[in-house]
Length: 511
Image 1 (cartoon, helix red, strand yellow):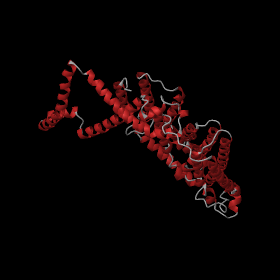
Image 2 (cartoon, helix red, strand yellow; image 1 turned 90 degrees about the vertical axis):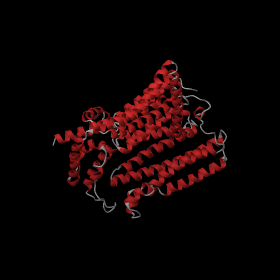
Image 3 (cartoon, helix red, strand yellow; image 1 turned 45 degrees about the vertical axis):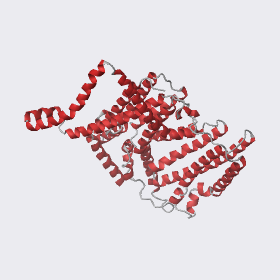
Image 4 (cartoon, one colour; image 1 turned 135 degrees about the vertical axis):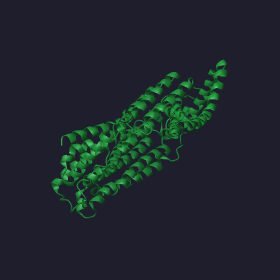
């Protein structure tokens, strides 16, 4: 199905490529990023209007997380969270391109969600080439007749004259100082540097514009013979290979193993201080040991249940209930082990402080537990709806990191822990592993600008060398921010930077 307005879509794509180059290339991410995403959505709206295509009402919710994560790029300064936000925006744009007008997201299966990150960019390139070809044909038609005979030779002549004139201009400028001065005013001083920058920015504009043009066309393109016309069933259904007996035996063997692990290890998993006092393990080993393995087991269990659900033959009624019951027991025991892993990591944080690499697994475990719960809901009540839960869990994980403000959370909790340990005066050294320090100011001052308002609020709760180190860092950071000219340009406006500078200025003014 050809596009009705290929020239308009071509112009829209190139315009977006130019905006991308002007707002984002070589600049720090700030308010320019959500502004660019809004312009992309505006171009999509115009494209759908030009092509008389309407989105499925069931898919309109996807624009809410898209705009949320785009805005959070200009709000949170944490590098990993920013990476997740940008990745979420790109993946949601791909999701929109593939499914917005083709299939309700709640009806898409796991293979469909697994394929769309590859399908969206690939088909955007394919559709972009088709739109460019259609635009060229349509444009050539507009030049037919007398106007073509008049303007085509002129354009060819200008292209031929350009290198010739450039060579003669360079020779004449060497021969006459007045002429050279005139050229110096008309042409940038470093013409080669100018040409290089023009080539780089032109390439970025054309590449990004081409991809976005193809993405706009692909979103509204309808062709029942193409792969997207067969969505959401992107892959043929798999024939069951296992009988109910084999699957139930395998599941309950796993259940027996998990149950034995939980029962035997209850004192070890949840006994806390009792275990450490027995001298069987150090505090660090108790907190760390098995955490990664328990989380990995939980992920593998989810994969096993999904695989057995696809491969197991079972009739409605008693067989289905038996399979579901066995799966439910497996999920229940897995959640108990997740709780154990969660507590292990929490104990480790309370002893050695909070860090990014300890916060991220904590949040991940919460959403993994919720996903396991959603698996049970879909298993018993809504078969075929598990895939949308995976998408929501992924988006929820990233959204949680944004809402909790990871770096500020780390500062507040570590300072709180510092005060609590100050009252015990390291009385637990004989039980715990020796502490290097109650707080690590070097780590806190290495966090992003998200942490600065919390550091300003809590610096006076510190004492001694930690307080001096944090105070020196804050003074130096204020000087750096005052001399940073890049952040003063409006496309680079960033709320975290603004809040950090405001907090530092008020702190310095009050001392």
